[in-house]
Length: 75
Image 1 (spheres, one colour):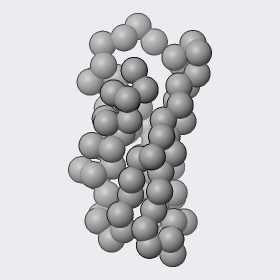
Image 2 (cartoon, helix red, strand yellow):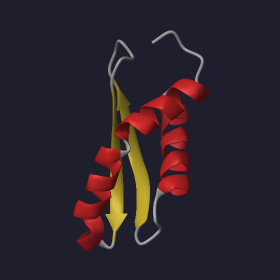
Image 3 (tube, one colour):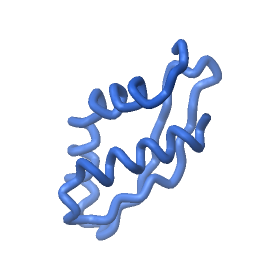
Image 4 (cartoon, one colour):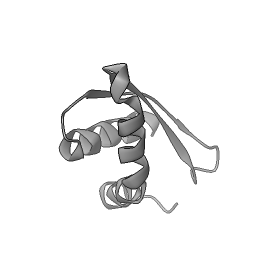
């Protein structure tokens, strides 16, 4: 499940970022009850890190909705 969510997160970021920096999804952790997921990213160049984190924070709900559309799970 973690691998599938990581692919979906990477695809979402690729489609929605402005491409001024390279954003790589390095890891994704899921809570044991599958209610929460944490996405870890690497940003290059590192000077763009604050802007990328702001972008990802703004688009958090959109990512959650993309997960819901792509995956057919109860939680």
